[in-house]
Image 1 (cartoon, helix red, strand yellow):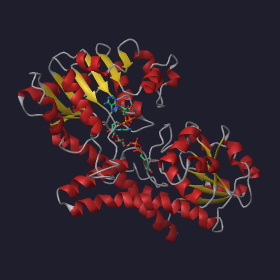
Image 2 (spheres, protein in one colour):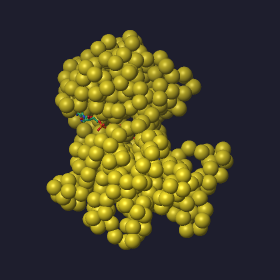
Image 3 (cartoon, helix red, strand yellow):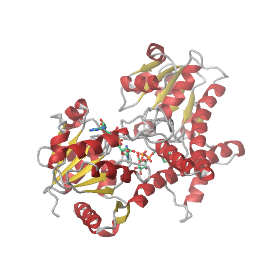
Image 4 (cartoon, helix red, strand yellow):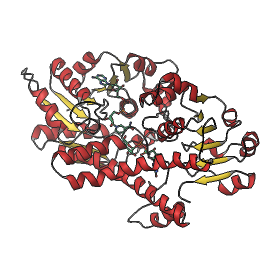
Length: 463
Ligand SMILES: NC(=O)C1=CN([C@@H]2O[C@H](COP(=O)(O)OP(=O)(O)OC[C@H]3O[C@@H](n4cnc5c(N)ncnc54)[C@H](O)[C@@H]3O)[C@@H](O)[C@H]2O)C=CC1
Ligand SMILES: O=C(O)[C@H]1O[C@H](OP(=O)(O)OP(=O)(O)OC[C@H]2O[C@@H](n3ccc(=O)[nH]c3=O)[C@H](O)[C@@H]2O)[C@H](O)[C@@H](O)[C@@H]1O
């Protein structure tokens, strides 16, 4: 089957970049990305591609090249579904905030809505691709909804999870470690798998395209995120032990990372992992394990989250303790609010939780992040519902100028590893601060020797 039209439901951090790269690499395919969020679609269509709603290095150039040629952003969901041969579902699958499985299970209401809309609109056979991260066996539910239309349309459901990381999304999409496609073993299923393999083959080499059954594919995505997050919690657990024993976690990470069986990536101790997915996907895994009565499996993975929460809290407690057990009315400057560098995404960022703890202690928080707005910072804090928006507004100060943000601060806390922080004029920052001037480096990016020579009291994670 020759694919000429693709549609993607959900123009978010995954749908937008993924489809932009498919459109760039497959000029013969028309790619339409649709979303209910009019504001988001307007931003994707902004004349100036620097204003697209998602900041990712290299993305605006790709959008500039393909948009209007074979890449389109629209709110007309039905038309796009009707025309497409392949429909990617790339909507959000957050943790449930109500009812059964509250705080653990994935909320599949957006997925179900998509399935129902496809069922309603489709007049011809379609391949429906799960791009969102989903609990194992969700494809079964989607298939059941689609097959109940009774209008004779044939649907094939594929699982094609996305492994891109934010901040490196374009690079990850252009040269992925692997593309995973799960499908049915039937003849029709195999045909559908081949159609999707052919799309990726436009730029990904065949040995990197892995095909499996649907359930393996769905579960592999949750497993990959669980393993990655588990490495961070493991090294963070060691960071606390390092602080007590005089060992240095960076040295320990280097030493173990040189063992080729362990590998050196994802061993960077930090204030704790954030991002929209690690916590949500592990909670989902824990919920699935519990629902099968596998309590030891559930407890094992839950510990990754418990350790991460501990690491965030430990960081804020340490700031309070070091500042003579009180931060009331003290100015603490946060360098960074995003959950990692090179993204404007702040979902589940450690900064939110550390700020919340410190505001509880009546601290005044000045935040500088090169890509995050005051509005976003306040809405992140507001989401926690710890206090009113007005109270948060009185505790959060923002400025476009990092030096101004640091002026008269009692302490600086590095929450995101933006490269520019390393290159600041730290002497100038020191001169403008209250003394003693403290730096709490939650990302271990600054030069301890240099900062101590200037006069800072410098504390890193795990040393
Ligand atoms: N953010 C990331 O780096 C990664 C995310 N994922 C997974 O991809 C999925 C999407 O994540 P993000 O792109 O980050 O979410 P997002 O929240 O940025 O985007 C989802 C979009 O879907 C839209 N939407 C929801 N229901 C809709 C409907 N019925 N019709 C049309 N549009 C609808 C929303 O308005 C939103 O713009 C999630 O399952 C996530 O776990 C997977 C890999 C990486
Ligand atoms: O499913 C998803 O959403 C994605 O989740 C992660 O990607 P992402 O969350 O964008 O970013 P990561 O680079 O994994 O970082 C996650 C968090 O862990 C932290 N981290 C990462 C690595 C490390 O060594 N130490 C550490 O503290 C980061 O600062 C960040 O807060 C995975 O890396 C992707 O493969 C996956 O597709």
